[in-house]
Length: 254
Image (cartoon, rainbow, N blue to C red; front, side, top):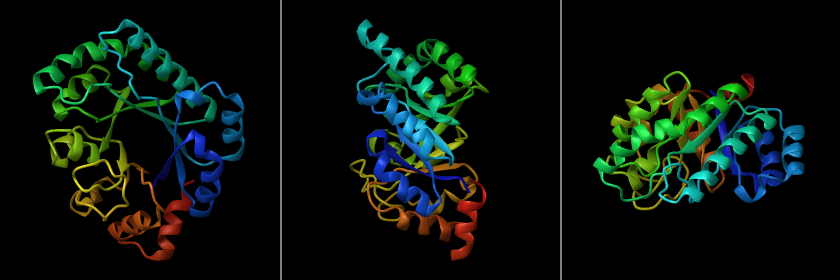
């Protein structure tokens, strides 16, 4: 079972001992303000040898922004983020489409093919670097807004599913339609259904027990803002494994 813990690059120093104690992989959010801090990346690469993915910058970024400066900045951030991912030895890089919140279903669909075209350089860079590129649902009103993008880059672009984003930000709260996009990477946390709380699994309303079991063989990233042990216990119970078996699952495949 490939389980990773998410944390921002700014918290790497405090996160690494916890990761090692729990035997987890890592998913590092690449803070834009720290992208040029070579020492941070060198230290993380030197100190962490487990499975590692990155979350590329996303705040206020949009490859389809009406502002050409924002479009240019977005492309630079994504490309440089992929370079940093490769430096860290990351196997995967997650990113958002950049769609603003509140877009209609029609507007979301209209963005799909232009976004697929705009992603050409990003997909090529990821391919060259050997980093698997994953598009995460964020503020899309429905999964059909992402399907044409994934199909346009079939084989080179995968899907990352975040059930909390679907519940809180979209108009398609049920996981089923999103799971039809065949996610190979999952961001796991729970929510009250109103805000993106990043709670431990089982604390909120997302009902992971009803749909997550068939996806336990995918890469699972705990995006929780509290001690992750409750979420690890949740996954252990869902997998039907004993306490020592969880340690074997987490540690044996590193």
